[in-house]
Length: 131
Image (cartoon, rainbow, N blue to C red; front, side):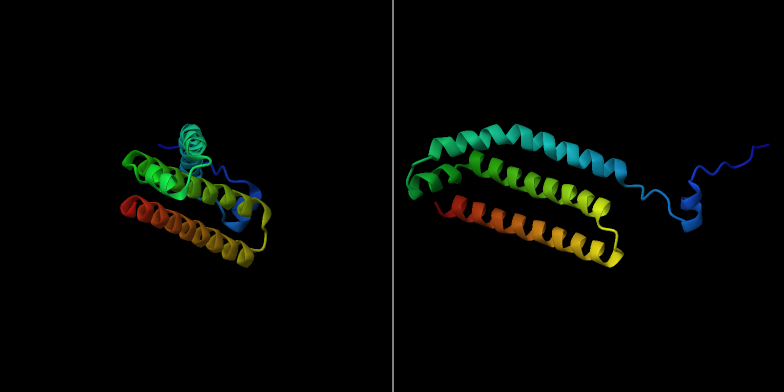
């Protein structure tokens, strides 16, 4: 024989029929993992920028064209845009309370981050493959 079913939702949650979106933990971990990668890759990027500071365009292109640098720069780009999208998503969810505007902003942020990542990866690939 089983006991009574306990409903742990708040009264407003029961009234609205709202509950957990079931994705908070995954979102939390994705943001933390991208932050750790960015924390590890930022010193490398600063070192690369200092190494090419004051150099001519050909030297900078040659530095980016090295496979290790191109891969690290692509990884930094992917982590950066992913982390930015996750952070902006939380800000929009917390501070925008009109549903239509929230959806429009979420779509805009997702498209802007995707477009930025694709453009950056295209530029890195073009430099790496043509230098």
